[in-house]
Image (cartoon, rainbow, N blue to C red; front, top):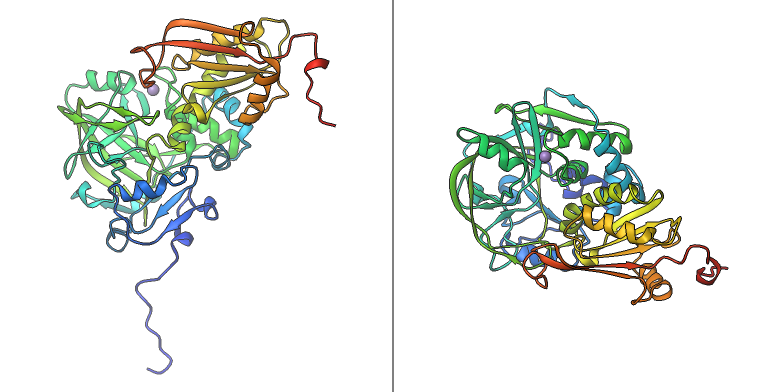
Length: 442
Ligand code: MN
């Protein structure tokens, strides 16, 4: 037939145009790697060249043609990107997180979600481009996965690294917190949903360590409501667990009473965490959007820092606010792995407020071993300004608080087991002597 053109079955499109949210809003910043790269070691090595930049691998293990699965690293490696995805300025993040923890939001119920479009019943994790990050790692790892569990009307959402050990098997690292107590209470297997690649509000809420019984999804909903003006919607899976509708990948799974090796695995400080016996997870079904993007946080990289460390900031803020009326901000610094070192800005009413702020900060985040207290004229997000405050407003004999033998982080190789020396540095100017310490700007 002249002039007739058969409809093409395959619509060739550029990966950037088909990116599902929340990746689409960072199209300009994402470095796209289109060539075939090995998900074992090579992918992580490329992503580590600049861990603050998102890298999208459209053809990891040559799987793009087969499954349409892509891998992204470094997505939430900058505060600005996290703030943008939530819909706010980065300086508002800490106080918004705290407010959401104090006043959780509500959840809308949806009947369907985009990820329900595709499902895999014959699960074979070994065919998916799940990265192995470092040579001595115990295996391929899901590093940005969150586990949703429900028991007796309580929902819990938390982060767990998952090491692939077989077609439908993984080892899960569970520290004794909320998921652990649900798992111990469960008579048999604990049904869970494993969720991947979604709005960072949910990821931050899952790392905030709210009290048992408080649904982390309602905290995420309040964060989103404050930012984009619309809360979170959830959808119930066939296994009975409800998950956010905006996930790109969801696994229906069970945590079993069987145990297997987990690790070694590189932790936030960039050093190895040893092998332990941990529970085995069995995956029953995988749901995913069209062309799903698997988010992998490179261990010890900037997104690991922010996703693990930043959610501690509102807890520190809450604690310091109880002893000092005006707190400007709290930041765990990237240089200190967003875990061991912090900066707090306060408005001193009386000399000595800074010392109380230090003690409150240490109490709120036991892993912190150094905190610098600055005045409100210092931008806590600018390391040079913080050092300037130390250079011009701090004396080691007068302004330093040293606490020996406190409990700290076992992740710090310089600590004595879990005992550490905490150092508080008061870089605030003396109350009543503003002029000598003022930074001249005009
Ligand atoms: Mn919890």
